[in-house]
Image (tube, rainbow, N blue to C red):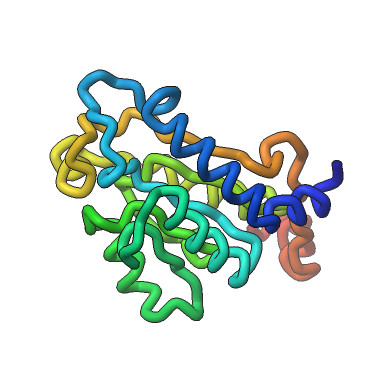
Length: 192
């Protein structure tokens, strides 16, 4: 199956539901199995989902609400350019106990520090190696145990994060975009 076919299949609501249901069923049985961590979905490990586009992000939010049995608008939210004050939404995702799943396209892909993030999920392909590294890097931030428990009360400490690859991002090589010709020339001449 090609990357484009994979992207199309993840847009399918039945596939989104299957991925999210599988995640829900595995999160405390296969991923976070530490006996010190009570399996409590009110404090699902902070999860960041990368969507293909705005419409895809909206569908993921709606389906996640159903999969996790949520009727409120706090548990899962979009952080996209059209979702309102993105800086405030990022702050809330970083600090609020009730906001457990953030769905974004690329807004939170680079330069955003959400230390309590414990799961990064790809529901879209990424062909650029620098972007993939930045997106994956959202999960590597460290956080003190007490700080983590302030937003995820059932956690003990963050000693790892999980990357959930629903589209095969990790199974193919990403490309490195060509730099501007001036930058290449300066590099060849030894100026950078």
